[in-house]
Length: 156
Image 1 (spheres, one colour):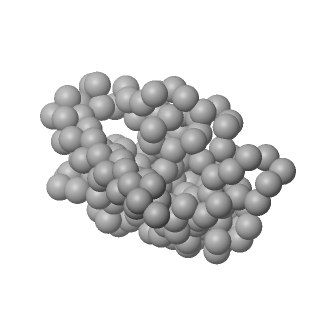
Image 2 (tube, one colour; image 1 turned 135 degrees about the vertical axis):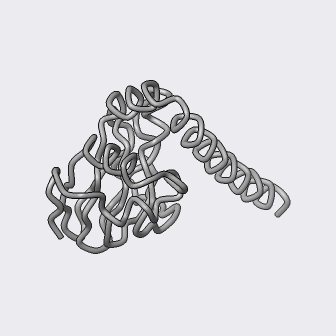
């Protein structure tokens, strides 16, 4: 699937939790901040430890989030599908990617430079508040699940 940079709003952005409730005009502007990259099954989309800073949204296909030391078998943390966002933590904290993401199927990924995304949010404060509130909620839910998983490991 090839999506031209100047295409009208892609319906996939309407399916992205982060952008829930935004109007088509705003979604069009967000879409034009990035570009679409195609990956083949088995390709690494992002690599753990590399300099981050880009926001990735899976348009189609499936991918797997992996972590582990170089030279050792990577541990699968989760599978992700259409509308999933990844790399977002590095956009906000400037740290390297905390995990790798590998294409399980052929994938199309919308990629935005974090600096472009942050500039957009700053210049559109009402949208920024909505997007950041959704993002904080999402990250909080992930942290809560991770805490529960760690607690169950320590109870064994």
